[in-house]
Image (cartoon, rainbow, N blue to C red; front, top):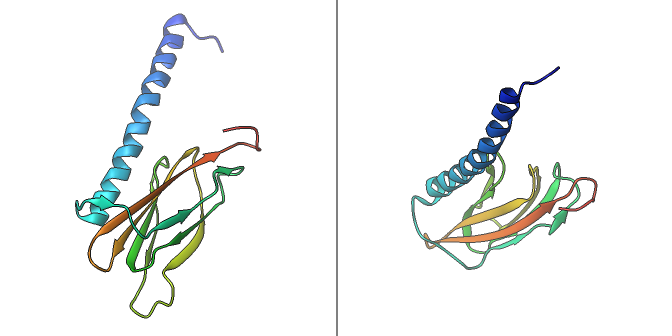
Length: 139
C-alpha cells in the first residue's frame, strides 16, 4: 500500500490531535465521577490509606487495598482509563473493619484515586501513581 504525501500528513495530524484530545476526555470523565460522588463538596486529607504497587509489570491485574476507618463508602477511580470508575465499597454500621482489596485493570501509567465519604459527611482523598510496564522493561 502506498500513501501519498497528503494522506501521510493527514494521518500524522490525526494522531497528533488524538494525543491531546483523549487525555482531556479521560480527565473530564474522572472529574465528573468525583463530582457525582461528592456532590461538589470539598475534598480533604484524612484517615484514608490507599495501597497500590509503585510499579506494576502487568496492567491487567494490579492489586490495590484501601483502609478507611470511619468511612461510609469509598469510590475507587483509575484516572487514565477510558472509563475511570473502578469500584465503590459501601460499609454498613455493622462492618467490623472498613478495609477492602481488589485487583484492577490499568490502561497505562496513571493515578489511582480513592475518595471516602466519612460518617460526618466530609470527603477525603488519597492518590497514588502506578507505573505500568510492559514485561518489566520500564515505565
